[in-house]
Image 1 (cartoon, one colour):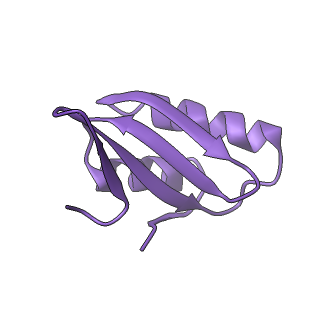
Image 2 (cartoon, rainbow, N blue to C red):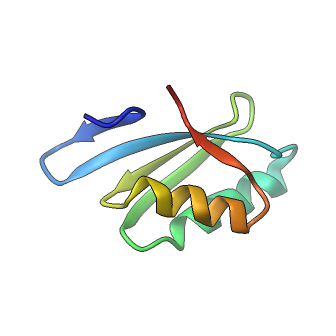
Amino acid sequence: YEIGVRLVGSEMCIRDRQVQGATCGGCVRSIEQTLHAVSGVSDACMDLATGVASVVGRVESNALIEALHRAGFPAAVIK
């Protein structure tokens, strides 16, 4: 299994990413909207307190990290 990935059924998985730069509820909404816009994402949520964004779907890890970087939020795989 890939680091930072938990399986949900046979088709879906949860990918957790550490996101930097989120300081308020507006940032959380922007991050969640950015992640929802990535093809293959069925759900996304961001925890402001921990800085962890969780995504459910069939999506490549790099696509999530690249989308967040383009939105101004550096992200990394949680190890």
